[in-house]
Structures are given as structure tokens and as C-alpha cells.
Amino acid sequence: MTDTAKGRNSASVLINKMYAWRGYAGAHQLSNDPNRITLVAADHGKTVGTLTIGLDSPIGLMADQIFKQEIDAHRQCGARLCEFTKLAFDTEVQSKFSLANLFHLAVIYARDIHHCTDILIEVNPRHRRFYEHMLGFKREGEMRINPRVNAPAYLLRVNLEYVTEQIHALGGTFSNGVIGRSFYPYFFSPREERGIINCLLLVDEHQSAHREAPANISSSC
Image 1 (cartoon, one colour):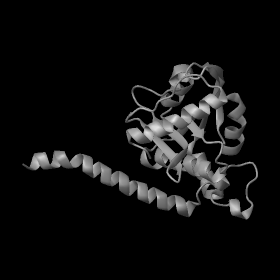
Image 2 (tube, one colour; image 1 turned 135 degrees about the vertical axis):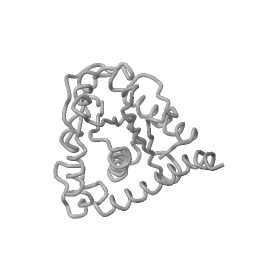
Image 3 (cartoon, one colour; image 1 turned 90 degrees about the vertical axis):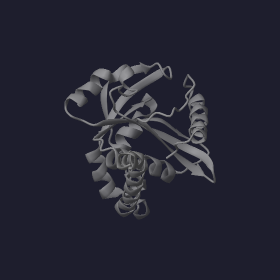
Image 4 (cartoon, one colour; image 1 turned 30 degrees about the vertical axis):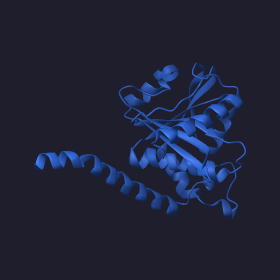
């Protein structure tokens, strides 16, 4: 997770580079927003991949700009939503494992740290089949033009219960030849996942205690 100006700038450079290569419009700068968590994949200190998790809040999600009706329907049913945005990966890094690890880590942050129930993602039509067939996303509504990149987009959603089932069944099985039409074999194994979750929960607990410490000290004086 990157929470420094330098880290966010490095991720922004990669996003703009890859978006420009794809022909997407606009300049994309990551901000220090408490409802957004940016993860990066690095190779010898160089940022090669990035993904941002947007947590639903009173100010909404980025996808509300063009898909608010579809998103509100899930909010009304009690869903705790998040969105994965600004996914970019250096084309020189041909590693399914790095992409899968980044995506899996984002799942863990969304599900186990922030207790989300569903992931939303806006994708270009040419990427839709990968998310639907390889990760189990479902289409929400019709294709629309995303003004942030001036390109067509579909809104896709996947329930985190389904993702969890796939990870437990397939995570880490790529070496056994269990690939087929799924990207989940490249994810961490269930054992690796448990270790990562425990580590992140300890870090989150430590950070929460650190944030609360000044108030405790003040009240005791």
C-alpha cells in the first residue's frame, strides 16, 4: 500500500503512461483521499503495477457519475460496495502472478479490512470478457461513455462471497495445471491468504491504536 506523495506520484505516472498508450483521455493524479487505498506492485523499486480501491461513503463512488441508478439499487439492498479503479500494469512485465497478487491483495483489503460485500469496476468493452469469464464479474446496465477517459465503459460487479469460494477452490493451483477459464489459480493459496490477512489485521490494529493513543493520553491527564 502506498500512502506517501512520492508513492502516489509514481503510481500516477504509470497510470498516465498506460492510459495514454490505450488512447484514453485526461490526466490522472492520485490524491490523498481517506476513502481510497492505492496498492502498487514494484520490481526492484520500480512501480510496475497499480490498483486503487475506492470505498463507498456519503460522497459516493466514481462510478456514480454514470451508473448511479444501478449502484443505488445495490445500496438499497444493504450491499457494502467498493470499486476497483485506475488499474494499470506495465506491458513490459509479462507476469500473470504479479497482476493476480495485486488483485488478490485488493480483495483482502476490501473484504477483510473494510468488510465490503461487492466489487464494482468500470471497464472498456474490449476488457469485459476477461473480467466476466476469468473472474466472474456480471454486467450491470448498458454500455455508456465514461467522460473521465472519453471512452465507452461497462459497469461490472462481483460478489465477494463468490470470489472467496473461487480462491478457496482454485487459489495457488496453477502449478497443478488447474487453469482452464479462470484467473483464480494464479491467486495466493488459501494458506498464503490466511497469513496475509493476519499480517494486515495486525497492522490495522496497530495503526488504530496509534491513532487513538493521543486521545487516551489526553483523557488521563
